[in-house]
Length: 182
Length: 417
Figure 1: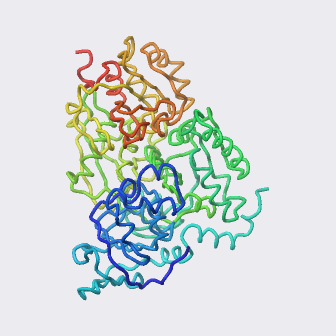
Figure 2: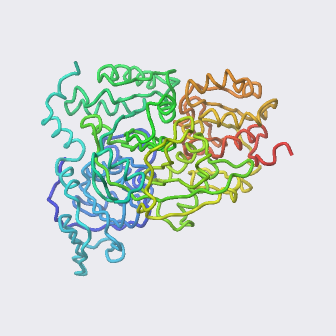
Figure 3: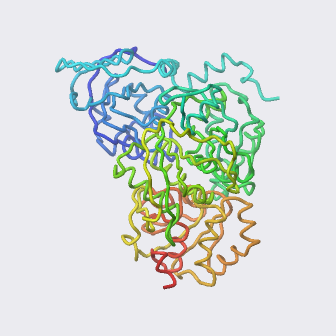
């Protein structure tokens, strides 16, 4: 699944705090250790441990707005798979690189250097974020801030559909990998 | 341009004169290491897309260290799949059950991983290779990209330099320092950034630090989310590498701190993570059901040798199950030849085959509900070694041995007084 709706979109913000871990925060740890990859099995447990009703309130295109160190802990991707399936996007103050790479791998769009963003966007606010320019606007208050935009290399991986899309493109360009080793 | 050791190793791996922090790069690994637990998943993901072979298979090494004992139908099935996939992909080397040993120790032991190398591995604890000055990048779930394309994009990390001075007091080891540093970095007490940073150790105390102690330090810090841990390059026997890759004197470290080893006492990591370290006095007296020495962090010969000094001629507490897991087959053989195996078995210990041992989800020695263990495992989150409500304490091999004898957590400095 590649990127829906383009890079400049509007949606409702759902604000989380600092240091929200992937394992045991965004998704239950037992679903991680079981290596569940099916979004249908993951979505019912998304955010269970931080806000059990959040998964019912989010709509496709909404933004999860987080503080520092979002997706901290180990770089597992089960929660990210569920968020991608729900067509969510992430705006956060910071994210460990290992998690950013994992999120890019499942084509979950994340703008990761939005310093102070949880200070001026509240849960329920309608916002607009342009990943190409890094401009985020709170449509309720009219305030707008500019953050570092998404790197071009990352953008192209997400547009290809993350790791899976990138690997399919690589195979098209390297057809010999589709034949058994001699 | 002055560079850190990590920047130099990454620049070499991309064939450029220099790289700088934040730069997106696709380094070329000399080696790609997978453990037995992820081969099937990676194979399935690639097969679904249409891949029937991998790029640079001769550089790929598969080691069996997680499910060395196949105690379930699923484990048997996985072992069979790994054999089939290793043959199908024609990988450079496949170490089956009972061959080689732990994937974070064995490749150094036989010179497969060497100082100055850049490699990629599935598992995060590949940072162990920093003990000899090699840079191993953890790919995690992105490892299919490495297998398909031969590389994986990354960003050049910043470096935190830690200079070690002084010497450990009796009863204190690098594992204690690893726990203490994990706690001090995550709590902010040291006032430096650590997340996704390379931690580079230097200072005169590293010159005499045995490889087993360097490994312990690399291992403990990895759990808190550092990018990598590096030491100045040495051979696996501890000999300095002349002309090896080290940081320039004027390298651009993001932060630099100095730690005095003589100020440290034994530590215990409370259940939850290595960063939950406390002075051992806080945990002393807690009765334990199980003790275990081994894992990628403390599975080398010297770890068992130090613990055996306490164990020799004694018997463990009747209430304790004590598991010993050598890191590699060669370490297990050396322990047998030197008499360490007899020391442990005479004391009442149980040997498990070389590999991860119970740190890999309790394999071979799971904990029951409410049980308490003290071990040298890599980490101790809920459910790591069996029941979710079991309490897993972490400590140095010597503290674990002392506690196995006493049947409760004890300060190793008090043993024999």
